[in-house]
Image (tube, helix red, strand yellow):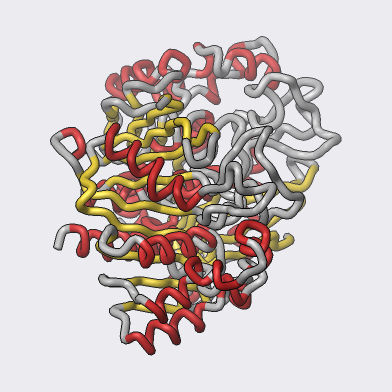
Length: 276
Length: 276
């Protein structure tokens, strides 16, 4: 692991690090905010998964999360959204290939050799951060924005027992029924839709639910509402009687101005579960 | 004036607008955060002047200021740092020309035709925003970062009576004694150093002081400390017995991670003066 930068931030450290990912077979970069409490021992962790076109950096500088995390003594991990490098397959579209890993393990060419983002997040990066930093693996929560909201919800439901709580900002809720999902799942996983179901938050919710609290915020003026399909997830969660707070926020769009507005709520929500 | 974008943000609106500046003789872009209270009538204003290489956008997305401004019912104005456009003079260096207006009115070629940033901020943009938005001209405060901290301090002291309070994050404190200042003042104002004194915060402090409270934060690990020279300003203010809180913050550098960390303090400081 290599340290790219470390900046003092709200009494803690906002770091950026790179490391070799075995799953993605390339170097990966991530951001990590460590609150002051980490100097005295392991602290709880909130994973933040980012959306299409983002790197590790967007949320780290735009989401206004560190102040609230510092107040709660919680670390924040900001992973990248895809493998990176000149040798890595890509597509001209912004929503496929680099910056658009969709948090799945690709099985199809040309993506399979490097696009293993599910394993990257849940295995490679997980092992690294708990080995290298003062983080408490028994207290983890997860959130994300847009494609990263999809990642947070699906990973939380698949990795049963690992996360105390899950939240999302304007998540892609039903990718197997959306143009933000069908194209990518076909490219990464092939045309057999039975392989997609395990990465669709609404289908996972209907099948399994989540053993803990869920918080979802989406703006009523989100320009991508028809692609996000929050109503499909809300219906599945209601049918399951899932413990959940589902909010449509009046006037808000898909931007980080929306994310930063509700970041305090999300971090408070996770803190309550992490310290329960 | 043209609306570039408006996003819901902390119950208010984060807008970006462009307009023709008579002083700079070009189109200029600025950001404006209006809290919810502006729907009911004019609200106090905090000007935020940005540093070298920045546009209107940097602080708008990285300073985490809107949440605290919303809590206090205060508007934020984020001006650009120089004239813009293909026809505008520039220099290869990052610290001269575009992105480096230094908040002065240039008198020398090739800068004089457009680099009139002092008048742009204090006249053109001032007239525009108080005409177009629900802002209370009798309640103004000013802050800034680095070159923008220099701008905030010098404008506040020159425009006596206009601002209730002034603060700065890692300001350039003594430009006429620094490589962040001497080159630019010579280029914009000529080699007669008597013309520089009116734009040097430390010299203005020694001569006039500021009729109100002053707050200055600088990191002890700021990589540009030798260029910023906070000690010169501190000495001038001490000699003047200026009402001031001057803080060297342990471990912090020059980045927006530093600015965002202390933004709550600065906005609370200005709110106290604005609502006094």
